[in-house]
Image (cartoon, rainbow, N blue to C red):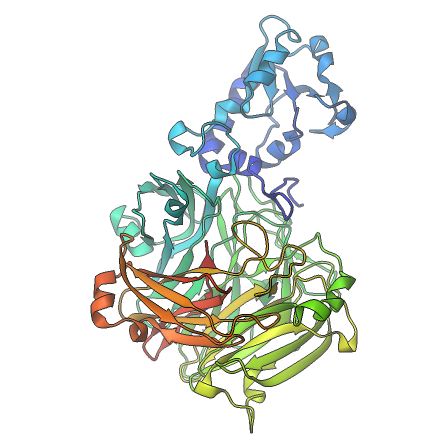
Length: 638
């Protein structure tokens, strides 16, 4: 039972309507509006822009006696809307109703058009009655301006020695925002409000720590969601952040990327558990309507059968789903497809593992959106004629003395029935040292690459680290759509602690373009520059960073990479320069790159902006807790 709402398209970007009517502050106003209209009598629905069905998906309209649905566009006459055939708005004078509800914001002009079509005494309502207060808006000119709904959710927990820490920067200030504020709403497992407050960051870091919030509001233990709404945003309507989980001991540590603010039909890249693991999918409702029992489910990637969750989840509620309760026989490296039905944004999954010495360790990661709009593109097989490796997916090989690196290609589009993939391994200077041909994989494959198996004999890494790249390889057949993904798993050889990260392929560092690649986050393709965010953390944690200079075809011989260290207020402390060979990588730690004095000036809320105007770097970041635990995920830029 998927929600019939538009959330995102790769052509138009994110849609604001579902955010506007599903906003936590709008939900109570909608209930008041429905109660008021129900008390007056029959209601006519005027749906000029085709949003009535989406509105009804998120809010219960059964209390209303709907006498008819009316439309503006002749081509929409007769269409089923709210279970009724749509009538032309010119037929409204024949309706015996007490209220006309206009399903639109900024509706004054449309309401004015109705005055000659309604009988005396008929009330006219619109969605303007559920608008957020002006203090919550960035733009007063158009209510559904995407910048008015720069919102996102974050998994947030403080319980039993487990804590969360959200970190980002006020990057909107770099686009001209003058008075950026964040409205924060903390929701518990049942979707009830625990606390709400404002953050007013300087042109610097934003740090929200669950331990501090719990003390500030005298809260008990909680597991739920943190809803973020940015006011006075500019440049980006996407709320990006890094989310660290940490514990009172060294058994809990992980970091993940932002949640991706648009609910999707499907997510993929969720790993099945190892025999010594429990994998928990955190299902966190993103809407003011319940998730009904049987509305979402799991399947093995490549299998048609879906096992449904027979539990309802309340509005904005959270549910810890042990994937083995639905798929008891599935084991790593099998992959799981999440049938989400647009009920929640990109979720988190938590891996609870038991090490050989009996220690429980926990880490959190995220699956990715599985696209439903792609088909195989035969042109991709010919890209090598002009763009060398074409689409490629880079991932770190962490220092091999401590870490084991595992790599798993993951289907991430419903149109992918085959995955023709080869893995290329490079040392830090860009020399290829080994390769592994997966062949033409089936959708339900379980082909896992252990990098250890390739780094033997003459195949060694200079400096004992490097990176690998997934690339398309059609020598064994197959087809491609450009949405090549992988799940990369890292294990500490000494403690058993792990980290998962996943991402997708792009075309890197060429002025030739194909299907809006090389991707640019500001302006048209090609994107051949870098701006990445690296957060740091209080002791005992040390930040680590792995920068990869991948190139589809040879680009500039060396990067010109600048590491700008800022304090929490956005003041620059120092700048360092780094040069990475084309095709190579650099692995470094915060404590080694910046000296004691520089780190002291930056403080616990300091951060690093990695800037390069000569090439596009791909970055991974994490935290190291001495010799006991670590975290890793891909970095974000803005």
